[in-house]
Image (tube, rainbow, N blue to C red; front, side):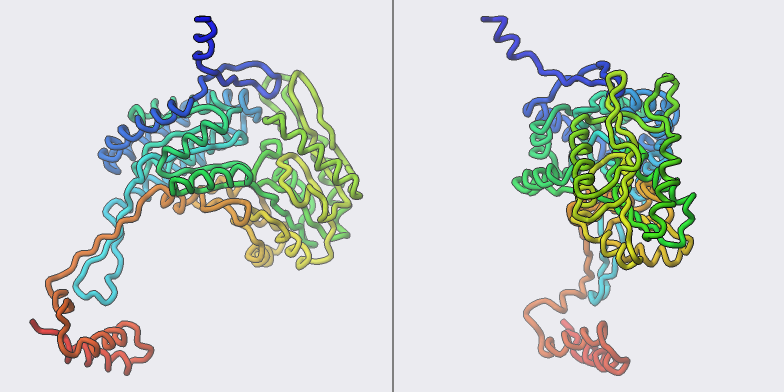
Length: 518
């Protein structure tokens, strides 16, 4: 009996596996609701000291993190490749965006530290300034597709603003989460300022209940639950959700260049990218030559790592449940008239699941693949008759995360980009706007709320405080109101908002004549 009680009290463990071969990599303790509460309380205490360090003190430590990321880049790449399945070159390539994120937000924090002077408008002689103060503890619930990059990048603006942070990594990548915490410690971040909690939905819900602001990256379905939970405590949220990004190929496009770009935009990270290309629109006469060029490229791509040297292009399906979506979307497209020109099947090798790059033609807009997020290496091509039709179809989506235009006419491409309903649109590229850290990143509709990149991200994690200082002369406008106060009020409106010079002069005369003298 005693043994049964002890087993019931034993902590539950979250195991980590290599998606390439099913090998167990390690395990971490699942955080209970009580654990999460204690972790956030510890973060609150640590945040006081972190904020008291001031911008210069925090910036010195966060600048040191850049060196840690560079020095430990190979170690990071090995773990991310093992636990997440990426080719090592991909996490290595994300080192620069992470370092640039640190530079962006440390500089912004320094610029905002003394407050921002704003106009006192018609309050003559007054001073008006806006200050940005930390909210306290920021919570992060992050996904499995980019566990390291997002795990570091999204916390940087919160830390620069003076907050402590608590992150729940995906249950598929707990070891990467632990490495992230270790990297911050290595840089000199004080104990308690950066912490991890692990588990499933219950752990995430407990985190939402305790923190002062929550950042969630994941599916729209879970995003709704996050927002509903946060509403119970009026906790502000930023949501970076899914996408069904459209690529529009214009009739003047360079087909060799475009074919390579489309393959990259769909197959990077094995297609497990929220702003990856999910549907392609091309002029009818270009569908066949474009398809042939794409098939030639994907045939030469290396899937998996049989050599063990880390030299491959596509890794395994990181999250096995995605396989069901891949098979359902492919079967639906074929049933409705699409033709699979290449791929379309799962490969099972060495204990891993590998989905071939899949090229389809004959697509129509009633197919699941053109309406829902497939989140894999799919290149579904639909014929269109004009740019206008392509734009209309691109916007016929409940999502609005990203998109791309492929053309030799850059000016025309940029003009078309303005007509796409999406948070970010690229011309002659795709996906990589997520690595340009000065750009805001996020979307419309079911693609989310708020932005998780660029300077806009910083303002998610601060409370705005207005400070206004008035001169003694302001007492002239206080009660009891003097005779002529109504004329004075109308005069001030004319002086500051008058439409004509004469109207402003008339208002100035009224102000001078009726200014109270006490």
